[in-house]
Image (cartoon, rainbow, N blue to C red; front, side, top):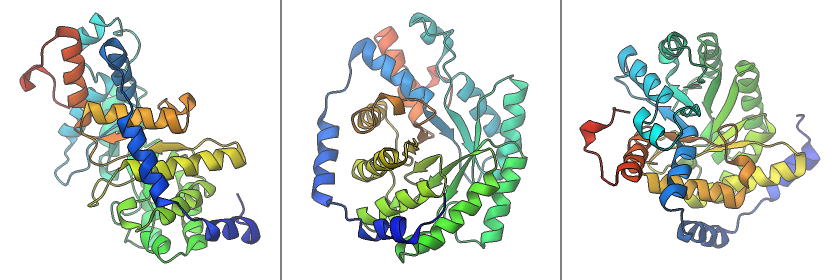
Length: 315
């Protein structure tokens, strides 16, 4: 999409977010009743299919990436799925997410397991984005060459904070080109943007530049996925859809650890964007420890008891 000075740039400069209204709406979403019993189990399985099962640690090795991939292919114990008649429905996570240097390991494991599960890679100087532009672009290209079909890029926060929206747009367009056919998820690092208005503007610019998803956080900032920020981002997605007819996905990430939280996230998406967005194609949860808690809750639904930690495979 071309950058139109008089329309898009002007529109972005005029945006203001009503903070009190955002906080009030976030409170309403959190106070809504979540499903119980078999309906809760169904929602939790839906959440599993939307997880980007993630490991982004300095001590990642081929072996723990291998284990992560096998867990992503079979995220819930087979006997638990069988008791819910879901064993043959192809329940997997949405993707696995790793550092660029571990993409080849993940692709190798999934290929050996005959799985078509997408491999997502963070790139562009994750998490800070403070490396030269050419280095960031090369990182994207290398991850795609190694077999990543989804790239989670980070924006240059300095450009957003200082209001250099056209420069930010140009950078993201270059990342979009480097991604080729790979889906591009754009991480806003909302904990470092300062205001809801900046979050809205950054969301809009990211979508204009061709992002397939916008994502809250790297998971490495002090403030990560919060419900008020999510309201601002999904309203930007909704506004963008209403003005262009193009659906952009949403991915909260960072600090999402409990099954109960995943139900609130699903509720937020259903209420704000509608059922069309309740699928892995348009909604992902970036998480590493969330799956273990969801599996514990499903175990409880099936057996009436809570599992000891050694009874469920490690996530």
